[in-house]
Image (spheres, rainbow, N blue to C red):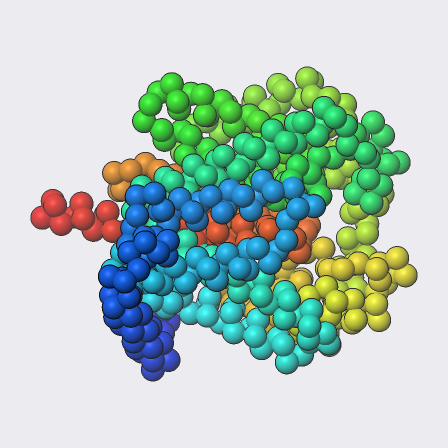
Length: 470
């Protein structure tokens, strides 16, 4: 346990390296330049919206604009959404945040705070361009990845106070509830059964699967697994008893929406996320919950029981199709496992058909698994860097939950919610390439930024409490 708890020495070496010192020097230089420019222009542009925002205007608050954008990103229906919005927003918000930092309105956070594995993962994305067979598509996907990285960094940097963390959690709670209500309306109005998502022969009686504002039911299930634990952490830590009761009961809505997605991998992932959340909240509730689930089985609709039982049916076309695809991808790894083939579905489509086991499997756009897609697109470096970073983040989150002494319970709750969600997504990633739909990619790294910011708040408050006792 002491070995796992100690700070990794590689980060000490990384922080003291020449590369880090150069980046920090450039960072400080740019902050001084923009700070001086802002102070020079400020008297002549007092009516400017940008100046009012950078100066910390009451009406234009950065955390409100950032939370509002995150809210809109998930509630806008798929037909009206463009991933370029997220790219432009990431650039715009980062520019504003940088100006606010140079003006002294935000705390400075060096890029090294994200860690060496994160840097290696970013580098692997750029290196993959060397091996791509479709440069245009790889650059397009790279822009989405860079936007996600910027959002993670910016959210982590922005969450320097408990009030900002609460604000972002409220926005995400609202987004989950709006999409869940939309899903219920879809079910009432009726959703057409999609044969490409459901084996009709083995799932007789299973209705059309809701997808809310996202592209399909599996994408929406991924969104719910990511952010429902965070909603629970916010709701159960409200100070007002009546509000806590109302908002906690409302969590039944996204859970109902998750059931209506009929996503089996989503159900399994959410079960693990709930188990982790309950374990760290009050482990005495685990046997109670297990008995309650058993008692609930006779009352479940036949369609849910039928869909769940197909998990263990080897004849299910969805499961067998994935296995066939994985076999072909494993053959690809023999030739491209070290270097990767580059980012993007077009690069995959250019290479995979030569390794496909069947003609039908050759039409797939990805490997149907995050881990296989990481190594086949980014090579060994990208896979190792990502696994290293996520294992470390989840390990640090587990320790932070146990020793967090922050006087605001939402902080510990946010770390716990992130840990639970990432455990759930680790299972989901075995059955889906969760980043194929960019809004889930953005959501994944936004949650990562929330966890990093919350852990930073935990450390700061624990140090303050220690100093007070001394």
